[in-house]
Image 1: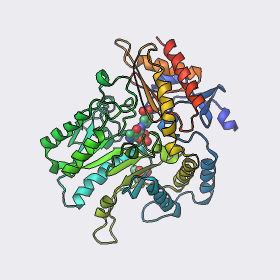
Image 2: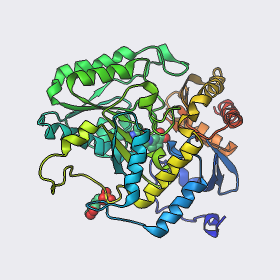
Image 3: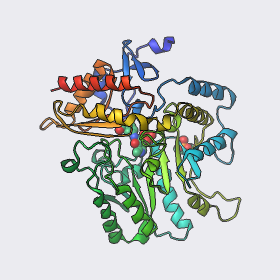
Length: 442
Ligand code: PXG
Ligand code: PLP
């Protein structure tokens, strides 16, 4: 371990931490100083099992040698190349490799640096696409209650998490929201995709009728909602959305920032559900979380619609300084190699039944009101403490960390999404930790 890792910062005030209870954290900091495969090392030397693949991103586990080496080598060879009007070979190689594993027909890729940027890119692409096709009146965007699409203005506008929206003014205009698909009364303790609720997709027809299809550019949904506490699509729901969008010429965007790259046991949720969107946003697992990167996949006809007009003109006025950054590309290529060598994009399929049984063994533990699972994702919903929502789950988070397990909590829901390299033994260990935590929190 390098000396740098051993140093404990003694003044935590300058860093305004993202999505963190800053004052609580700075009173009792939780510091990670190293990581390997399924575990972190905390600053006090303890091993902490990673129950969340970082923030749903370290799908191949931590500090994988191939990825580390690729980054080191690339940094020494070509550190940066301008992203606009210039190229470098591996960004093209990466785009080809991504298209190879993408759902059929999604054969162009636009690079970004995060899920939030992927979402902004997709929304802009959708509106611009209709315009270049001569349908400039299609500008409205439809999201969904409880949706999470990152934190930029477009993303929070189509998103449906009230606390992420209410502080930030009027947001984008011309946005509407479908209802969410969480029906605990009917679906609590479902194993995998729930039976009830697909009919709620017909609310999209109502919204289309209200605004008229000719004003709507795109519908954006997470195939499985992650951040909001793992909300699954009822059986048949996504296909219904697909059919309604197709019928009305509306683009369907799947936000696969979490579901992409093997999380459900298939390369993408589009594969898992057999429903192909028009645009797919990704990030996180594309580079194993190691270096910021996002990728937006688009169908050929969308890309091709832009490729008109004089050839010296830029077709799509959009891009980021770091789109396709060489070091991020090297990390992503090595990530794809690691996924392929270890079969990680489909490993979740084999493990899912074991994971499901292990998680559902927590039914009956104190305060557990629902357990949900799909692929290698799980959620345990706790009854909130009266008058103090989120407190019980936050206590569970702190207790779990004390015991040597990192979990995520959102509201009173514990979300689990371990690296896809997890073994059955480690699944048992993880679930045993959670069981003890549930028994220990008030
Ligand atoms: N879309 C979806 C579906 C996401 O899950 C984003 C967009 C934004 O990505 P960036 O890279 O800009 O953060 C996300 C990110 C959590 C958690 O614990 C989830 C996310 C990020 C951080 C924490 O639920 N999702
Ligand atoms: N702000 C200023 C002043 C800039 O010059 C740029 C990029 O050139 C940006 C923001 C956007 O930065 P990025 O391309 O990293 O998103």
